[in-house]
Image 1: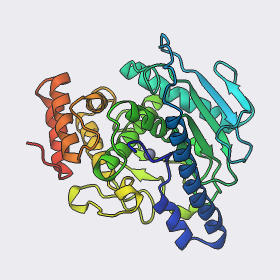
Image 2 (image 1 turned 180 degrees about the horizontal axis):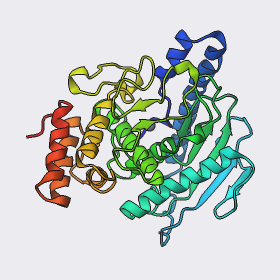
Image 3 (image 1 turned 90 degrees about the horizontal axis):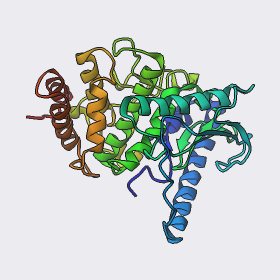
Image 4 (image 1 turned 45 degrees about the horizontal axis):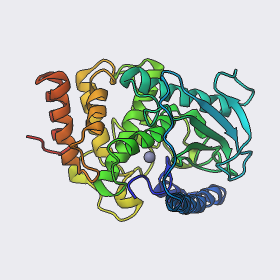
Length: 351
Ligand SMILES: [Zn+2]
């Protein structure tokens, strides 16, 4: 299965496992519950996907909308584990409600839509105006957020491992970008191509946040999930693109190829080795200065859409396509040089 298997979670299993191992009894309880829930959510999603496939894939494509406007619907799961919750609490164009999580989800989905539309003229995840559905208050003290291929689902967190997940706009951008990747490069969620899939979500998730805040590369924090990690993680975020391996106590991310982590867990370390391409993008953006979505962003977006990028691409394959994409869009010069230099700095050699 090419996409994240069943569902794409923002908090990888090793983070929850760490809290289960090192946390206090209270901290353990909800982290363990979340880890078990994630397994069943994934299994349920795979089951549903197979059922749908067997029914014959024949869903008619939506007629392409003119574009430029998101179609958002926010649902409230009322602490139940039901991503198909039908209780609509805010529709497109309706004013803010009394529930902060609802408004944050609505705004985050809107900012992500706006980023892709304004910068790349992409009309939603599928470029066909796919409606953006969000489900808030999912589960009881649920320590995660995920994209299930149709909906963006947010847990409230347990207050120890994770806080209210709707608060992080980059997490929303990250999750929706899994959908964009699925509709473009379709990077296989395993090993290096899986780490690239994760990295692309961090890269665009971070850009969504920078775009919404109007930040330059210098002003950006280059963190993923800043503001939603709880005290049990002893850190500031889930990941750091500027300094992979420093986001929280025990953060296993490498920044360079020579520290690549060979593991069978986490689909071959997709949330771990993503630190390497994440850092390459950060280096490009910082080297070029200004707004990350003016030069570095389009190079990564063109790469994602390049027919020459295979689903099972390695870091080296991906790096080669970024250099070619930079030359194609900006000519031979500072941009393509910065891209090549950045990959070389993280130990991915591009001639
Ligand atoms: Zn992800």
